[in-house]
Image (cartoon, rainbow, N blue to C red; front, side, top):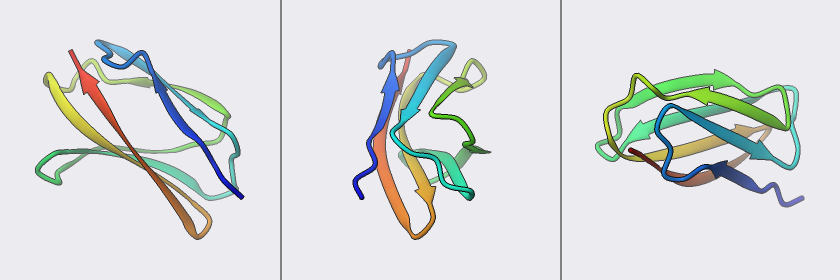
Length: 79
């Protein structure tokens, strides 16, 4: 099954909305800097989740959405 990871707006300033096409019982989103430092991790229980990114410095971030035995990756720009 293909699961789509979508984040908007991109770039975002304070709140970014994560949309996924399916949520498993053990779904997590991790956000990393381009240096590999984890800056946010939270369980995903809804098809649409608002993420508070106001505390993050401006820059490019890598997203990792893990569910079951699968992983989706994406990129987000914080203004």
